[in-house]
Length: 262
Ligand SMILES: C[S@@+](CC[C@H](N)C(=O)[O-])C[C@H]1O[C@@H](n2cnc3c(N)ncnc32)[C@H](O)[C@@H]1O
Image 1 (cartoon, rainbow, N blue to C red):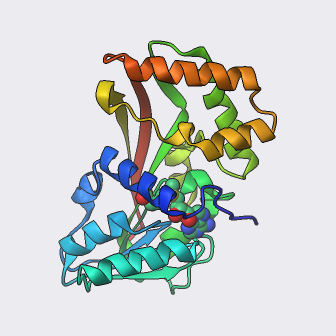
Image 2: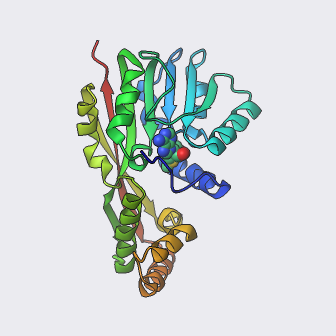
């Protein structure tokens, strides 16, 4: 199974994840499931932004952040050590093969991970395996197919479609959000609660990262998924969106929580 994350772990990607974390409200959506004293595991923690916020909440409990990329784990470790946060630890691990025995954690969660792995059900089954009976599995994932740009921008829509193809070519699942409840049920979880949260980026705070980063453009062009005319038009679309104080983009995140049978 290939589990290569195409966006890497460069300082630019870490900055993008910081902006994304703020746009998603940090740990706020997870708060109903987090309690002091818990043992928690995060899969695909990136530079540990959520892990750090959770660590502060659950003392004297412990949270372990895990990621397949060493560079992210190293960045997460240095930041939490500098901040003298002792309730967070980090390891390099593939979510499909977790190096833990069963029933070790009260909560195992991930955010924007399952859309990138080749076998999301396998990862959710692994997450469920290491949770104690009665404990919870939580995931928060995007659905790239539910997006709106206003005023309408045709070239940007074409770039969005091409981006989804590139994502699928790398083994990911851009439309996973809508499948989340079914994946949880197939992994044997019960009492599943599915929620949906709009992400609105508006006017002066219009989000221009993500599809706009140069690396992505180059890959789309190199794979022949867009032509240079679409590229030029999409840049023009982007400029007019940025100049219009009433423009916005709207996308949707799905989150699910499910419990291990007692
Ligand atoms: C979009 S980032 C999200 C990072 C973090 N969860 C956040 O929301 O800020 C996806 C992360 O998943 C990690 N990842 C991808 N495939 C993985 C796998 N099979 N096992 C563990 N981590 C993986 C990547 O290295 C990357 O850090």
